Length: 205
Image (cartoon, rainbow, N blue to C red; front, top):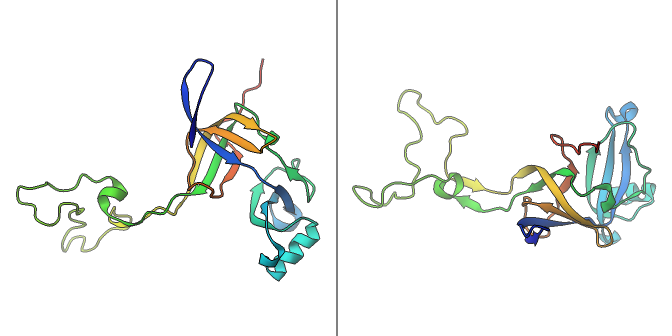
């Protein structure tokens, strides 16, 4: 993450997203697969690190092996040829996007860290269990702990979608998209960028 200043001198928190070696590897069609989609690969990968079945997939597409593959659902009029390279100029400044990523893993965490519980008193009759989550259920009725009860457990490493992030600026030469706000995941992790579902650019005039 970083910060930039606009013409008014207002500070905005932004995240830099690198778009590198994005290429169409395959197509999914309504007639054959039941839906329309493009299979997009990102970042070139050493041939020695690719399995034999995937080597044939990339050979048929006549593209270099890729680190990650992802399907993007599209309409029937938006197909691109296999081998087409996707650039940053697909997005424009002012556009809203949805970003999907995996959050940073925190390991096993207690209820105070994981769910922002208050915790028990520091003194006044509380011993040992200052950070405990308290009772989790009744006795004979209901006689069980309900599912999805907020308790201690594994925190992070979950798939999260951040919606309606605004594109502040782009750098086509360096393949960088600058968006306002933050995105899930650690530095250098992979994220999926797609046009926002809930917000669109209004036509001028």
